[in-house]
Image 1 (cartoon, each protein chain N blue to C red):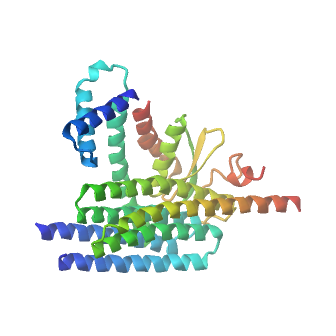
Image 2: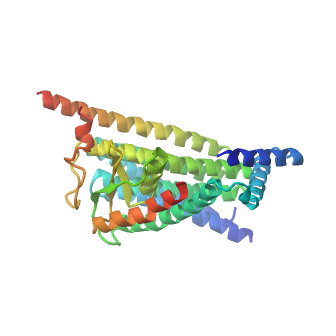
Image 3: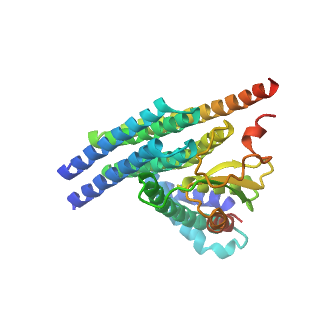
Length: 157
Length: 119
Length: 99
């Protein structure tokens, strides 16, 4: 991650040159430095920095969209105007291995309304999730793995 | 122009408060503790976030925006943690799930937190 | 502040007060400890929302700092309460097993 250090250093240089030591200055410098490093990316062939930052930003946007969509579903369930709620506890086998991957996956599940991480087995192989609309638990398990876990692994690996 | 901008702020604030209200209605209406938490923790966070965004739009300056972003990020980071803790506590305390719960692939397995905390 | 925004803020305030009342109802009624933690957790979030709305209404951005501080403290309260319930359940089970 020394590209991140370089990025911050360039942002600091931008602030110094402009004599503008404010958050706005830092943000502008950081974005500019990031674009410059991105243009120079053939210099860093093995770096995952860009995939991580851009992929991470894309994932965050997707997650926010997902939060809104499913909050709407839960709101309808609460008010009793949508499909009836069918809770279930589902065991999801984990492909994520590291702490970061598992934490991100578990937090994403909890943040999207309608699903909730209850527990992770001590051997870190299975994640137990409680779902509110689980008329078809197997389908939901496959959807969650396909939509969320694969996205996270694609960004982080 | 100012009218439209302020109207946007107002609509955001009402939408946020409406999500908070849905969270509270869910808290009162849902059948068991875990489904109550589904409604309360996430709809509540979303509602709170929308109100904070309205606040940031009303004071258009960088330091307010930064603090609002920090507050929202903080909410988004802590909600899953506390939801996870509460969910496990509810499950481990052995409380009965709602009778309409479809299947339970955790109870009775070696990973059941109720059993695990015993040892 | 336009009259429309003022009306919106009044409606939002009303909705939040309604939410607080419903959460209070759940704290008092329970029935289990778990329901109370959920309700108290929502209290924290509602209080942050209420302070943010108040800051908007008063035009005083300083209240935002109070909201951030409260969000921090409420989180720790929730985690502590959840741990307490979990450990109490484990102890209870152990005693039942010994008896």
